[in-house]
Length: 413
Image (cartoon, rainbow, N blue to C red):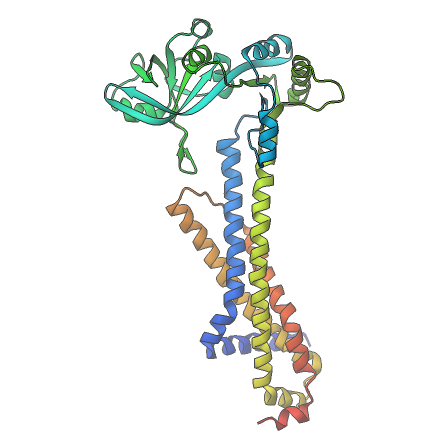
């Protein structure tokens, strides 16, 4: 019996393949829905997984013992959230100093302000859209800029609003080609400053360079750009295991500074590396869910097409079915034959969809900055989904074939 079952299964697969080959155009049109559905699933999963890894490694990489205190969330997902954040009181340098002096369990506390779109000039050469960071020396230590030459900005230079700066590799490559920039002068939006340090190369995020930056002492920054921006407070705990206690301590200090009553919620944000990643995961999962829903529609359409083709196949092969039944084939044998055929057809569509999805994701990552990362589980899920679609939508044609009266079937011309 096991041998007969194996032969019956293999024969059903062979018949399905022969049918696909004999009707190539019809088979191609039959598989389009399944191929598109599975290809969409593979492509979307690869991009979402790649983006998640990319964001975790290169964007929200604060460290397990660092968190930020800010006026508004780093990631704003709707206009109402933006409006609410704009109504909050800004953080000032006085707030920073209160947190720094009041948090006895903090390893380090810093303050920073950032703006983009600046112009950096050396002689007649210039670089646009530079990110300008007004930081305290403690932020430079917390962020770990990773200098390749020169030194960090000092506390004394911050106190005296000295015209010094640290620069990223884009400044060096574009404005100091072949020349050591340390000790040289640049102009940041017209403000002269001496380069005292050069940061390591960081690469790009989704096509945007992470090396086009200048760090100024925060006092120098505020002298040039004003004091109207809200301060971002950086806090480093003594260890990752001490992060929760440090968060609680800083929260109590800030609530006191902002006179928030016991019953009211925070009107500021405390954001750790994990909380930022959770926000991103929520955004990416929404996109992932929507795309998977669209891919599911393609699979359903593909399943309906498979069911229609299988009904046509039953009609075309009525004499074959009648002959098999007259020779002793049971209903379950006919049922299994057509179920195996429908699932084989959809499984082939799944294989083509997996191949197409892998090639598409690699191609897009090759020609664009979009990152992709493909694991084995979405491939397995895609193949299982396509096979299940074939089984489900093959039930009706298979049951119709199994219920045929052999005498009636043999009479069909």
